Length: 281
Ligand code: PAF
Image 1 (cartoon, rainbow, N blue to C red):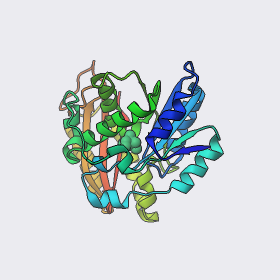
Image 2: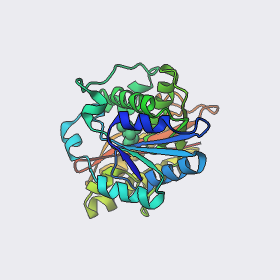
Image 3: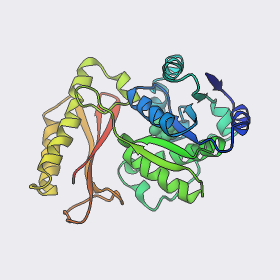
Image 4: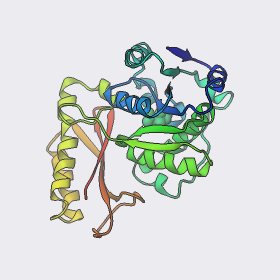
């Protein structure tokens, strides 16, 4: 397995590749879990060359404690990838290699979807995501890039980014993988205590309940129901619950038959912020 720690050497290695070989790319922040591995497997099945980047991107964190505490397990990540396929190319750059002198995000306008949900609660987050994904795409020049639907808003943002930056990469959204108790897999789950891990299953249970009742219950009542479920669970603090239009991500107040909706939750288990979502119709 080849590990590149500098963009220059990765660019050089990829320039030797056969021009007809398709490059699949899985950008990650490391602390890899089965969800990431499912993205890598899909990339392996659809491309001749697969690049996985491991880089905790400072400009997408609006909270320095969260950045500091973000799990970093590069050795375990590399051995997971090596066990999966020796031919995966790993990109493990330093902040200075990608950002050079200025660790700052470019300002993006993604057509207002950046202003909803995560955008409201994590100021500047999507500018940071857009900045790093643009940098990585310009280095790797992937034909296809794979993103999990757990970060559904991020997935829509990256699709807009590709259009804005006139990149040629196809963006592929992949299903959420879940723990046995239903909790969406996330690198942040590594920071949960056993009790918090168990309690966090409430997020998935609540989303299921919302989906089951969506046809027969008003959005106002569903909002109340979710608030109630979280009040019953003192170990979890609801940051937001939204039913939103799946395309525009605008909060839905009333249902419209022709529109596709998704439910979104962000909640804290202690200091650990968890997000999840589910299609409703
Ligand atoms: O989803 C993530 O892990 C990150 O936001 C990404 C896409 C790797 C950019 O840093």
